Length: 206
Image (cartoon, rainbow, N blue to C red; front, side, top):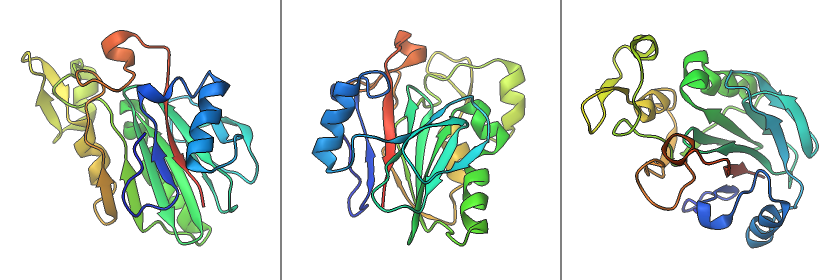
């Protein structure tokens, strides 16, 4: 598990922490290690830009970003190549699930805007591991949606630099990056690389 330095309530799980989406035993162990409640507020992730503001734990409906101003309430998204992005304000914390579809839909901007509209503009951001351009082969239809962020895989095919897309949404924030590639580096679950059904979590709490 990665806990960014001086982050307070932010953590990113790794494959060694188990399948925290489906295995409640793994989720309990992670919660105990972090000193947070076992019950998290989570979403039915749909690769879009719907934002949920929540006040209690449990399944909060369809969406790809979730935030709270309730102290002690963990909010989380689950990943296995997409990027988990945690945004923190003095009195709120939010988490976005940012794959290419969510990034194209503006999920990070939507989360920032929703938090700001309620008086909780984020000042810091934390970005977990995800698929990097070295391994993110895409078709022209996807690449065309990210002009300026085209790249190449290590085997020479068309790619998108998704970390750069995410970074562009956070350029004015104090941002920490985990930096790992979930596909070719050990320690992560990867849907694209290994067809993993397990999921890691990006977690935030006050």
